Image (tube, rainbow, N blue to C red; front, side, top):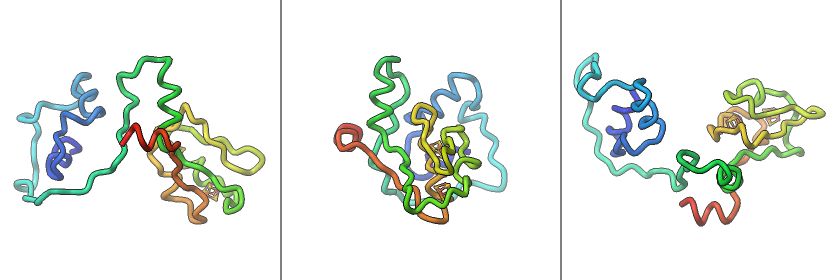
Length: 139
Ligand code: SF4
Ligand code: SF4
């Protein structure tokens, strides 16, 4: 599905790291083996505005991974706005949030930057923060 949908919005699916990795591991069929059900794909006219930052975790030597992780966008939790409901921790798919004294704390090395925590916090206590150097280098 991701392979086909990325093509629909004008992205070459082979440039997406998760699709490349899936294909390398035999988890994604060859394009001509994808069975399309329910009729042909609709025609959608790009251009779509794509996100500015790149996800560059893949193929980075171990010692540099920590540095790159610090430069990537990450969720920040506002102690003032957070009510400590724990919803973000329960929903985090990567177990990257610890509740410490009733407030969420990020485990940076586990965070996969899906930003589910930001989307689901009803109290707007989660914002996305990126180091200025990361904004410059990873755009
Ligand atoms: S979902 Fe929002 S309010 Fe609840 S613990 Fe997380 S940051 Fe705090
Ligand atoms: S961005 Fe995703 S992985 Fe990171 S803490 Fe939030 S929900 Fe967890």
